[in-house]
Amino acid sequence: MEGQDDDKLNNSIDGEFTSDQDELNKSTASTSSEPDAEKKRRTQTPSPHRYPPAFVNVPASPPKFMSLDEIMAAAAGVKNMSLAHEIAVDANFKLEKLEPSGNSFEKKVKEVVHKAFWDAFQEKLNEDPPELGHAVVLIQEVKDNLLALLLPQHVRLKTQINEVLDIELIQQKLENNAFDIYYYADYIVGILAKLCSPARDDNIAKLKEIKDIIPLFQEIFAMLDLMKMDMANFTIQQIRPYLQQQSMEYEKTKFEEFLKTQRESGIDGLELTKIWLKKSFDALKDQAAEEGATSPAMLTTPAAIVNEAYVSLLSWDENQLFPETLVMDQGRFTDVGDKIHSLTLLASILLVTYSTVGAPIAGLQKLKEKLKSEIMVILDGTEQKDLPSMMSNVAEQVNKNVNEYMSEHGFHPREETQQTALSGQITSLSTREHPVYKVMYKRIRDFILHIISQRHSAPLKVPPGFSVVETELGKICGQFLRLISHNRATFSSYYTDIANELMQIQMDDLSPRG
Image (tube, rainbow, N blue to C red; front, side, top):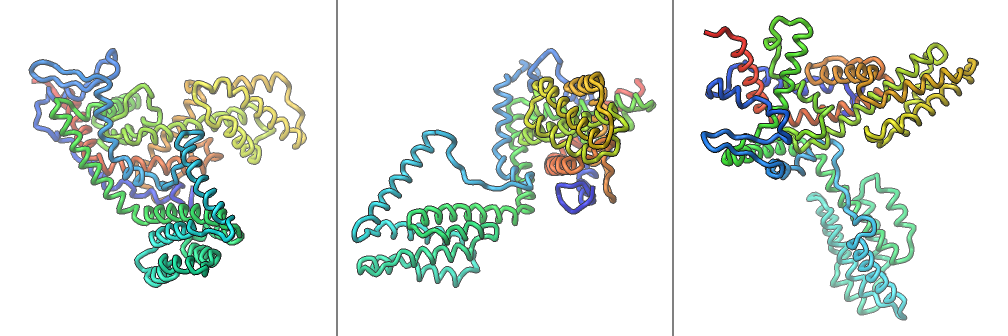
């Protein structure tokens, strides 16, 4: 996958985590002066029989336990920094005008008030001679909005607007029957055309075609709202690098305050984070043992622990609380995980289809693209619990498309038993425990782990079976990289300390006893 698009996997990921990887690869020396027994106790996972997991403090007396509500209330403190964080981690972040939803009371009130104003204005315009007092109010509001859109360098334009839209002069013209509302409307539209972005040229063209005063001013105000959003979003994009740095510093400060408050209450504010990293540490040890390592714990590094922990988020148990350091991004990580599993399911379906049907459709890339497109439409928005019922629709569509392509290429139609067999194999993929699904998920998981674990100077090879979703995979991986890059830069010091402590405890356990 090549190209300079931020959403694609290429050389741009090279060096993404350089400084943080170095920090995570520090020596495994203990970062605490606490006794070994105390360090062991603090990193142990709570008993599986106690759920939900609670922060536990074990002072001399008495022991204190927190309820789930108290845990969630404490975690909510971390979410106060969400707006700056949203801008920092979402490259596509933009402000949008908030509109009241559906038939809400707010929307009805807004519609009634606006209608009353414009109806009153229309009545005044229908008088003989027309009463244009409302027009002065509108021009004043438009003028204020235009001046708010100007940049500091727009000195001459600001002077011109103040001269032309001089409300005192307009009022005098109105009193002397010399006021031409169309002149001012045309002038305003001309200013909007100068200030708006090229993306709004079509809106300006439509404005110039409107001749009735009421619809014209309604659209002028709508255009002003769009331009204010455009200006705000342009500003955000221009200062994003600065916001990212400031967001990290702010989050570090606020998180320190959060931990301090927790400590004062006798609570370990990193309990869930420690459990999260401990699980990854244990997983790496088990993996090393399976591969025949003589001393699995010695092959583990702090960076490896953290990288394994990040990838574990892609299959997070929704019944488990998120680590404190990740709570603001829980929705984003869940979204990335859902997309990864959707791509895995799609790749599994195609693998089963091409393996089962065999030679007649081998090499038919157009068929693969068509199947991909239609399967994605059928499964769009489907939750895991609804997959079994939806997979029968997928199987039916796959069989239909395969039969059509085989007929077009001169092959005999498949027998009913062959179609039934393919349908059965496809519908059985609704469980993530299916052998084919597990193989495909391991491929994509290992691919993502490889991306975040090493520096790359060349384009990465897409895992087997995923070439048809290369574009989608690139976008999802780019999103995941941005999330963990920001998180790692903000909280890597905590992760390093916890990982070093885990490894020190393991080495103490392995050392000879005197």
